[in-house]
Image (cartoon, rainbow, N blue to C red; front, side, top):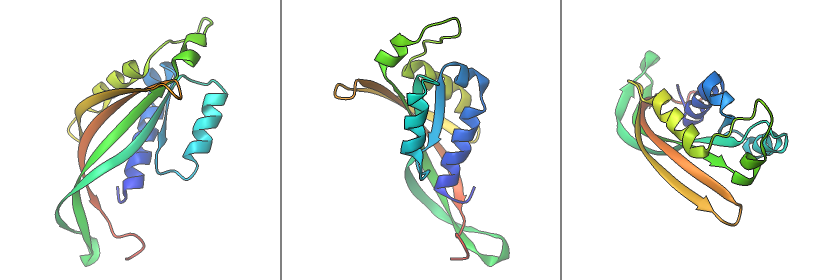
Length: 155
């Protein structure tokens, strides 16, 4: 991985490829993607699922320089990754039919904690919040990982 945006996209892709999580009615979006708002809105409007996951690289800490191939220098970092699971309980309660899965943001965040707690990425904590204005509930699962940021385009 060479950029924080690539970390976000790789994690979102891993989530979206996981049948268990998609069966829960969840879909992940890389927060740095240029079209995140449009894609999330299309997905929610189509009622394809009930829990949206925004993957953010919320903070980073410098761990030192890293030597790269060709004599280039990179930056070794500890990166905080947040997976923000957002549900609209009114939409979730409206789901019906034989294939309806009524999973909450908390259910999805728990599944993510189990999926991503390994040698590469470590689960740290949950936080839960509600926004009365939008009628949504969010659960953020926070993780820590390390990476080396490569110079972009020879910079």
